[in-house]
Length: 478
Image (cartoon, rainbow, N blue to C red; front, side, top):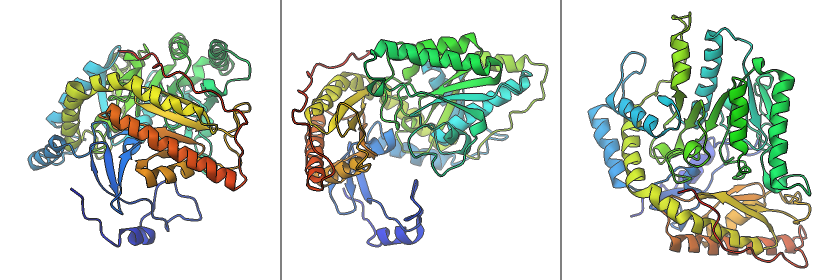
């Protein structure tokens, strides 16, 4: 079934639609690849070409496109209650969804504040931290620790935490509130350093920075369990738990940003506890909570924090924060059904197929342009480098990811290009056979890109490419 695409959609977009993340030379005059419909792991572009949805939209179409049971929930809930104001009324789906999410969360995370997406979820967590410290009589305890390679959103305070290249080149932020730490990227650790020593270095940097600034001034650390848009950076073993302990010792709130990793991307509802052994003070989520069928996000908050607020001597202090679409009944009803599908069908499948996904993608490391393939669960990154010794991310051609994406699009695969990297995070319902097709197309797309770069004199391959790695799957938590 192909949806009809208006013939003038591309030109209309150029005339009227402002795209996200544009550059000044094309802002307000740009049309991007038009998508007509979706089905399972596939989408169809404006010209009728069927593509594997390699990024799952934006890490979010976890149960796949065109799930009729989700579409029915949208309709049924809209016909029952389409909206209610969250300022002085509530709805039943949001209460039940909060209960279900709290039951899946680690530690004492017991309450949920719903938002409209990931950026507003992170913004909410940070504003809650500020409110919490104000009520407790610590107005100076507001600094936020973040890391290189991080991505936490596009709203003002959340975006201030971002540490990816180019994100902040032309944008303002609350720099006076943010302290940046090193990226936990083992691939680009100092030359000659073992991964264990690299983890020690990161932990010592964290501890030293806390000591230098003073814990009395630091309100929170915000970290993705796996840095997603920063290139699927999987931290060294044990690193996150050690950071958590330092936060606990210094009364610094640990906010785990699971906008990408929650709701199945790593095989569990939440990865913080089940995969990384963490018990954060707050978890932010979005994307997979509705599999992209409705804009919804939220923050799961520790019972301890709420009790401390309720015991304070400022009973009238107001958390003056909310959104018009907080606890939206349609979004919450749909998320409940999506959670049913995840728990009944998808999570076990994701855990089962993930080692194969990682191993097949890892085989691309025999290509000279590929410096590393890394990932966890059903998220991975192909990191392209000019040479493996310097790990130079192709300074001569920063758009190599876009080149690979263009070739792959022609061959039947949508890739998410990030400068010199290609990110793969398909719908969680992908099969082994579909993974094979995806990897074959990606290999051909990279090979064609290498030919382009050679022909244009931008790059030359190593004389002796590194041997392909073994295809044994990485450890995967069941």
